[in-house]
Image: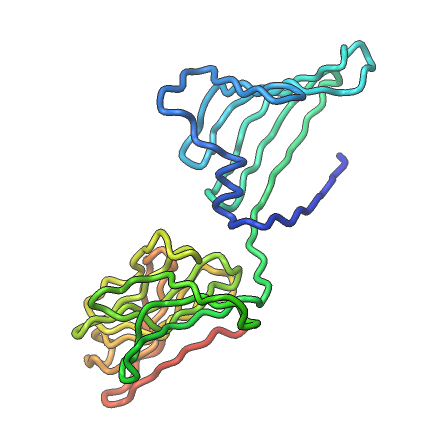
Length: 256
């Protein structure tokens, strides 16, 4: 079987590219749902789940006029795996050559080192405030991306692929780790905010967050210790046991 790979760079956030490639069906859509385009058409026979996994479609498209094709070919395709804003994989059979094919596309953010992330405040005594993005060349105005209200934001960092920001949002009594898109949308709590969590850092594979927390630990104290949690908020665990009166902080992931 032959294999072909192509890479494209698009100046747009991953979620917007996904939305173009995988537009949601209209609320009143019926099946089969037909999508016309200049070189052919797609008929959606089954919609699949939210990400499109399980979607079944048949496609008609232009091909060179040979083997009595009439200049048209048809494929029947099933999406076998899909993850929103990340991956869509399909298998297909097509005629007139009755061939079998597999294909996929994967979307990845490509950090370019041109943007800085920081918090700012008009009060020099604050230890946090709204988060801002700023061009690293100093040109242009900072862009405020959070509005913490009576809280304050700090300890912000990008995920390794540049698609997500994680930070801590603090009140007078506690703080929690929050993740969001790089434009400040889709704020999602990662920790529950019942203790003081800070210093988040995302693992190189983007699946875990290490952070410092004053939650009750294995030593029976609330001294600051290092904890790890899934980026989806699952599987929180303490690293080590700790000792009463000893605190740890400022975790950082290695690349090996």
